[in-house]
Structure formats: C-alpha cells, structure tokens
Image (cartoon, rainbow over all chains, first blue to last red):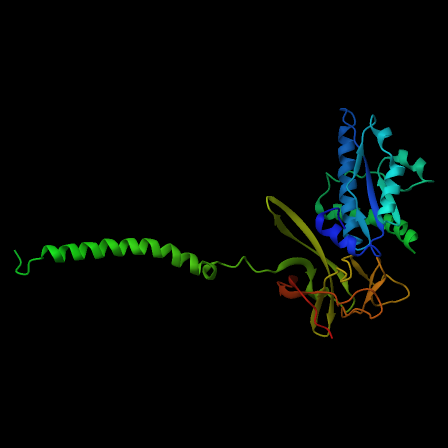
Length: 147
Length: 167
C-alpha cells in the first residue's frame, strides 16, 4: 500500500491484514562534496522501497519518507513516530535507511540498514537484478517479524 | 440568347437552394464526422506486448517472464515492468498474473517448502494451485488472473489481463 487516498481507504477496511508500516529515513546532504552521494542514495532507497511495496502490497504500507539533514536530525522524534504509527494499528513499524548511524538505535527500533548502491549508471535490466538481490536481503527480516 | 429565359423567381430559387445546401452541409458534415469517429479510429497497434521469452523454451515448470510497456499518467510517461508466470499445459501456454487476489501482493512459484508446486503469497499465506485456482481455506477469494497469449517469430507475446473462470 502507498500512502494515497485509494490505498488508505483499503487499509482502513483491512487493518487486520495490513499490519506493517515501512518508514524510509532519508539523510539529505547538500554540500558540494556530498550532494551527489546523498541524491544517489535517495534514489536507491526510493526505488527499493517502491519495489518492496510491490511485492508486499497487501501486508505493508510504505509511509512517505522522513527526511533530515545533519542540522535537523535531532528534531526527528523517531520513537514518537513509531508510537503514533502503532496506535494507528500497525503492529510492526520497520524503518529502512542507508544512513548507518541508525544502526545504533537497533535496540528500540527495527531498522533495516542497507549500503546504498548507485543505480544511475545502470541500465534497466541490471537495475532490476540489483534491486531483486537487495529485496532478498529484506524478505527474511520481514518474515522473521511476521512468523 | 436562349429561348427559355430564367425568371427572377427561378434564379433566386436556384441560388438560395445552392447556398443553403452548402451551409447545411457545413453544419452537418462535422456532426456526422464526430458521430462516426470512434468507428474510424485505428486501433493502437495490437494490445500485445513482446517479451524476451522464447516459446520453445517454455516448459511445464512455471518461469517468471518480465515484460515492460509505456504507461501514460496525465503528463507523466513511465515505463512499467510487469511479470507473469508462464508454463506449458499440454500444447497451450498459460500465463498467470502474479498479483494475489487477496490484497495485491506478488505470488511466487514453489516458494513455500510445506506446499510444493503451488503459487504462494508470502503476505498472508495465500496459496494457488498451478492452474491459478485458489486453495480453499487460504485468504484469497478467487483464482489468479491470466494473460492472453500469442506468439511472434518464436517469442512470446502477452496481451490483456483476463479474469480466470476456473470453477
């Protein structure tokens, strides 16, 4: 499910089945030295989460990404966000990011950290294989929560 | 000088009918054109999409076949990649849509070790037989959709999605 009118309507009637929220955490950097890597990682994370959504449409909702920069990161109350999503009815709230600093939060949060892979130079076929490989890393994490 | 002179009345009759006829035609022609336009519209070249799957290579074992087509969403054109599970059943080729009829997850062939040779949906444990028929007692309420199948130069073409009417 995406966070849009149609899908949310379906979510409201099927809350028993759609019990997982997938929240991308996007680290944006704008200085000249880092902006390229940051945008590439963003592209990677967005493509990957859209692919995960396609595979698990009926079980998880892909929440719009929460973005932050170095300066604004402290303002991101991820724990509160998690609680809020849980009170909406999501049993599992899983964060996904390419920023490794989140791995230190892994005690309180379910964080999937992935090293970003630059997709921009790949053609369609290769891109698809790469994303499929990455998806294989994510599936066990999800199913271990579910079953 | 001819003998049958055209009277003023006749002259006016002719010219008025002529001009009136042109005006009527000018109004009616576009209307008629609009009315029959849908019938004249040329169909966009087939509804079939080429895949890279050779028909000769298709076996009884379902394989994943990717195919992509352009989708126009208002001003935004994007290339959509879809997949189908394709296998041979007797002499005919079956192409099933991988979209679970429960809540739209993607199903996989033979991915559940407890129930081999079935399509399995990892989201809520929905299962389908090889024909696409949903296994009773699992969440899906209907069989998997199928694709129209065709062949061109030895390659598989996939067409419209059709609802499966397995009993």
